Amino acid sequence: MLARQLVSGVARPAQVQKRNAVAQSVRLYAQASIADTKPPIPLYGIDGTYASALYTAAAKTSALDSTSRALASLSDVLKKDVKLPIILSAPSLSPEDKSQIIQELQKHTGGADKGDTIKNFLQTLADNNRLGILEGVCGKFAELVGAAKGEVEMVVTSAAVEQKLDPKTLQRLETAVAKSEYSQGKKLKVVPKVNPDIMGGLVVEIADRTIDLSVSSKVSRMNKLLTDAL
Image (cartoon, rainbow, N blue to C red; front, side):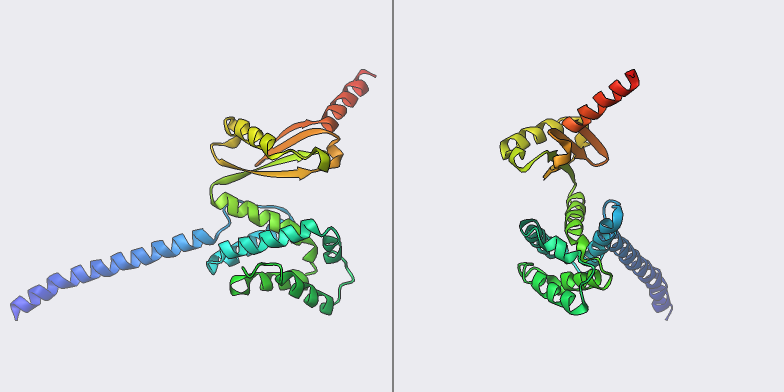
């Protein structure tokens, strides 16, 4: 009897210790899971808010990769069809119009909509009259996914389509910036854009830093000098 009590007395602390260890592991796993669903960087603007919410929803259902692929497909469609963003932004869309638009957009997700994540998200945008920000959400979501992979976006803006930088030039620019302090030691993801307002030259944006080599910037500085002189 005594031996049994002694064995029991020794076993209980061991069992308690084991249970505590299991409980601690569960807590750590839960904390890690919560951290994994949190967007890696803060985003601003309405499109950033919706992109962050979508990121969290996709992460919770392990659908980040499929959601990323689906949004990339939708982004391509929006860029190729210049009339589509205008239609999505129309304030006169009826519930029937929105439902039809969602069905059509789903056809362009490439079958990558795991668990109807994109379908539900598009419905949320439609319900809140926000379908017009879809293109912005696609870009912001890609930024979040890149940040989660340790990447930082380098947006290179040129003045016109015919002046759009070729891949070789972009590669040289990426290599140069990667060796500078601007890259922060992270992998760069080059995103070329066109903005006629800069008139010529380049504007390079990395995180919260900007390298402005545009003609419009030079003109503004010259105008300021002339104004100050007068």
